[in-house]
Length: 281
Image 1 (cartoon, rainbow, N blue to C red):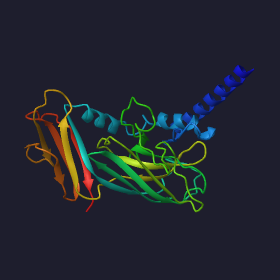
Image 2 (image 1 turned 120 degrees about the vertical axis):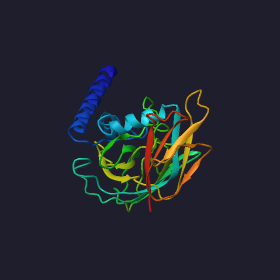
Image 3 (image 1 turned 60 degrees about the horizontal axis):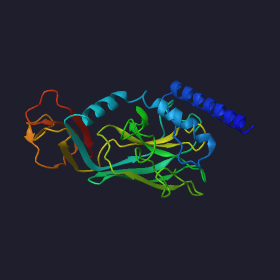
Image 4 (image 1 turned 180 degrees about the vertical axis):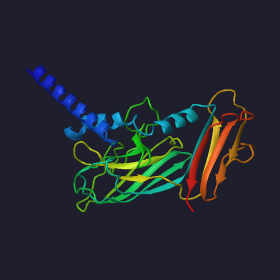
């Protein structure tokens, strides 16, 4: 009898997963994986499939470019602080039934120790947990959760989630007034690709209800280049199409505006990878 009950439960769960994936294919939206083993059942299995089913459908070019740069002979990182402001998603990208007005900011800090994120947000459903995750892509062209290792598990520490508790896989937990504080982090630095923070609905199927873009760095940044393969003895870089320079250590870039950095082993400038980023004025 217990075996029959377990089988029925599995079949029901699979049915929910298929339904959630179908929703993700019809509209470029995603949902969240489960926060913890104790999370409510409606958002545990079905939302994970919806989110990671959409992961490969959006931002694929960014994935490919970032992956190519990350696996080349030289690895590049941009360290700095970026602040995003929450706003609603464009029609068709998030929950079509959402009526919440979510406001607040989220800060992403990348330094030599890794990545730290924090948020102060209002307008959430009082007493209802809201999962929030770092996503690939912008708020208008996004993929799924940002994963440091694409072949790794869809959860911290391979992803960064904002949590109101000490549990790195916990959700935002709003107060009675709908406000919440949250933080999260990892010992790695994200690839230099468009990123955003998404807050998800507290109810099934857990689609996004608010998003904040990390469109620009708040101020000066530090460019860090290092060998990613054996045999790289010297590195050169070119800032904004300028002359190729020997990389002798971290480089500070402080001028406001858009920047592009090409980098490669010394003398190997053909088809050198590039990263682009913006500094706020």
